[in-house]
Length: 90
Image 1 (cartoon, rainbow, N blue to C red):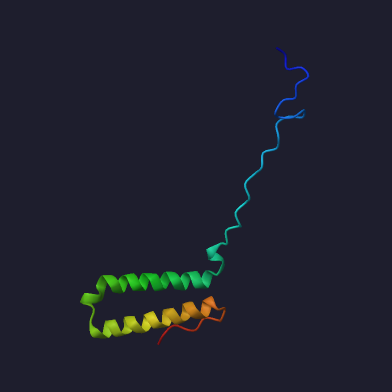
Image 2: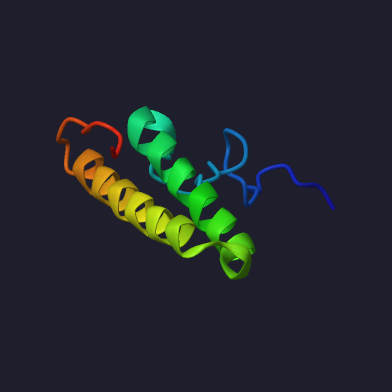
């Protein structure tokens, strides 16, 4: 039996085109807002430090740690909405 005269399933000009899956949306680089990323990293490091040392901290250290947490949280908020960063706590 010959295949002459028969059309193949792939058509006369080769196989049918393969559809490519849709491309996912481009990944937004989280490091685009560098100051925000740095303050977030500082907030996380401070929080981890407090969690590790809380039982051994003096009341003065705990008070300062709480003030610093509040300041860092305010900085994260300011930077996330596009305001200029404030100065460090006094």
